[in-house]
Length: 493
Image 1 (cartoon, rainbow, N blue to C red):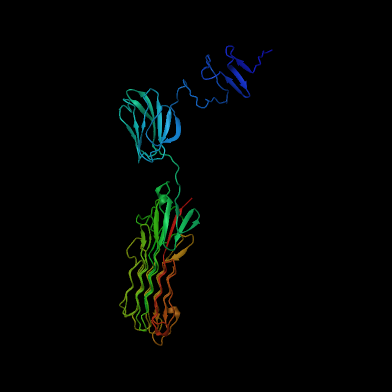
Image 2 (cartoon, rainbow, N blue to C red):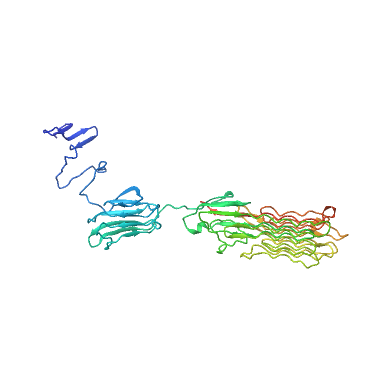
């Protein structure tokens, strides 16, 4: 039978202090800091398998040695300080550069430091040796100047002093995966966000992605205001310039004018505000009284996003004396007058891909006759024609292009139709006025008076030209071009 001794406490005879004390679930050996416990044996086991041996709060250990690591101090240092062997520090130099003074060199001493705010490249941390101690064989300071750097120094001997045993410059940090931005009317399509501006505004990038520069290249469409149609037997307004870039990260069906990957067309955004200009349409050419004279349509206003500017559409030429169409993103058509007028040039100023096409020429004013159609984003405006039999017509506007950048297929950039006038006794039907190009182009007017129409808002469509005479014999005025639009699309998840 095994013998047992059952007691709660074992105390010293001399002063009744505790040697072993059992209180609840805690067993205390010894009686205070002044009474060390010495256990003598070839093998000492503390704790049990699977258990934990812990030092009390504030206690220190000696004799166990180190494993090449430090105890990291989690309160960042923000000013010059002196390091203690066995400790690691986070140095925050975001406010200013400062020093870390090394302790006196003793073989086996170890100190670590890491860049807390990733600002060592801007505000350096200087490592200063103690007295005549060396850092890597030289009694000189060491300067940490790499973003995100962390180092560990071990003191070896008086010859080499402190040697850097670990040096990380990988700067592994959390990163913003996608662009974060505000401004305009925001919608989503799959993994993309779409910012649509139908008037002036600001596209503000609050955070650019840190996961590769290509993610900061945004898809965009910039359409300028369309030109106004001319007054009289006039030319249609040219469409506003149409420019588009589709990046591989934002899948949709782009227009044929996609300018990716041409460097001048790409826009790589950063954390900042980008003012957006959305151009208005040009005014229609005014009627100038009971005569056949009419004014040339106004040029549309440019639309701008960052480095991309789309030019406003050219106004349509007014009637008598013969007036040329005005050059622009797309050119305005010319008036009908003795065959001397020509349509305005498109893609002005020139960009690649072309932002628009020229306007058509008006027919000579001898019999029933028509003005030239305004140029569109994908085609030139058509010429007007004349015929004594009444088969003459105003030139149709050039067609625009279709893109799905907003999440659905929409055509924009159509030229305005040319005006039509029938000669005395000739048949006159509204069908003989110039049709607007697909993508918002206005319809030309016809005489006797059938009203022309304006370019559609936010398509950059050119305004329709008048057909000479309005009610009461007054010359009919041309219609205004449609306003432009700016759309920005990027991946957000």
